[in-house]
Image (cartoon, rainbow, N blue to C red):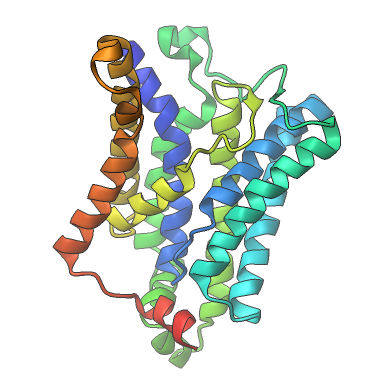
Length: 296
């Protein structure tokens, strides 16, 4: 049971960090479909940074800077160039996936897996079998709690919600929805860097092309399923992670009795069902901020 819990925490932590990035973006009025691309930028930068500098702190800083730069670029395309935010997000995903593959090939001469001598620092043997977990796993409950406070109990959170739901009302009191969206995407960039670092350096300690494997889209689905709530959306992401981990364990238990591809598809099927169920329960509808970005 402890091994199963550790596996769930390891697989769910990157997904929850990326989901939080999607939550803050959607509350500002941006449906963030670029999560996958920015996440893989963070994963690639972390491993390459460790290899190049020999320091996890410097590698994480590089990852954060690159993910923030990608987020700012997305904001420029959406706000200044007035592109459709969904199309722009998908373009960012393509840029992240293709750009990281190109970077690895340019540096190492091939697209082979890049291994690092170490990864994200662990909490240590003093915690027993849980000592293999990284510092980002332990920090996750605190991050979610602080995120809830930021979005639900601060003036910043109120203005952020207004920029997503009632941008014209925010302008009437002197607010700037565009600036709020920039702040949301920048914060989301930091969270994507952490999520990517945990994915590549938490337990694997390597980077491989396409290693995010759709986690950015699963995170977006968790945002929709959790109604962009700072607690419900991470809980939905954790549910997807639990089902994915159980699917892997089922492969070990049932072997050839259940089709391998079906077990691998469990978390993605759950994602589709979750989004459908969410839309049925809430009745759908666009947010004001997204409607403003889409229709102009």
